[in-house]
Image (cartoon, rainbow, N blue to C red; front, side, top):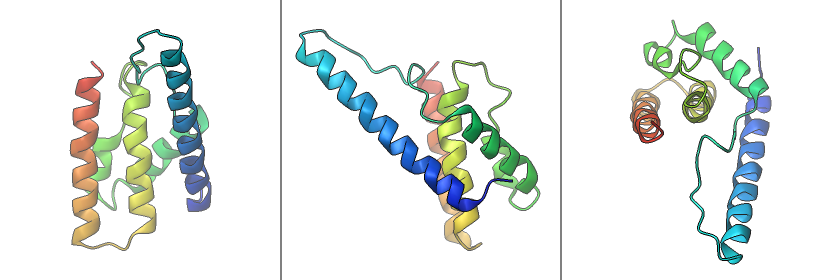
Length: 122
């Protein structure tokens, strides 16, 4: 199972990839081309990180029932990365915060955001 430190390292890589994608988009727009950032075109969560998050969710779904709704392996390949972003956030919230009403609220709101993002990517 992936440690919390590995997940935090993944978040750092996500931030770096996101900055890189934003810089790439700015460079292209400087050239006079109109660009639209397609979230499916930039994989912010590596396959290894997706596998680690999926394993964590499967292993801990009995501990917190809401975690089962962050599963993304059943989604089509175009939607899987979008859902995986939020699954990794849910894993970090669950793994690092103490069990309390606020953690449950954070997971619930992350689930709501995931649902909206996946619908937007359709």
